[in-house]
Length: 348
Image (cartoon, rainbow, N blue to C red):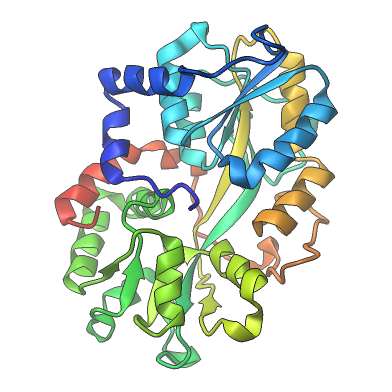
């Protein structure tokens, strides 16, 4: 599953003791390239190996030299980088979400990327100070069962989900990072009190908990619930796997600048002070190259962040046609506060 991690694990990451434990876990038993010799480039990847392993093999061929990839969750690896400080062996951080990159930016751990890398990507999908750039994008959507919900009855804004008519009919994956990033966006856009108010009302509507996005979508597909709050690519992956005729659930893009249409990104940054910064910049450039962007849109069903790339496998609406909320994605770094609020409201 794409990053479904127990919420309690996320809460522990930011204590110094847990950070040390994470570092030990991630580093234990990991060998560098070339039979124990240091690699020419070390990448900390918060993206799952199953999803991007093939792409990072291509990256190795593109940048030259030996490349070591260390996998973990984005939050764990960001915490590890902060714990390691200047002692880190990492040269590149490849994150599954903007929040972890924003945390490293705030702590001054990422260097400014070259303009020829930054300018490939629209301004809203890169850090204001140029410390990271998006590599792909994903959209929050509402999966719905057309047997239960007509097009005219679909929600058009976040507050529609607290209407009593949806009581017990909405599914969500509380421990999934994408849900947590979504709630963080609600906090950023509405403030703590506004987010708490919405979460309290949402909880009163008795939403149905699922272990992950896949299960939430499956529940919509079989008619167990009417609506599911997920990321878009789960639906496209299901269609690619079983065929459109076998999938009952449909997708609704809310638009209107509403949090329900949040566009979040995976992205890359170069670790400040890396002695291999030239290779690291080449790695970042590769991840926004045409070939890498084609990989994302075809293999992972994500949105490309480079213009002129269209999928040969999935019928994705153009990213430019969406109407996401106006938000600085770096501000999604405030995960600790989100987890505390989710625990307080009983939705974590």
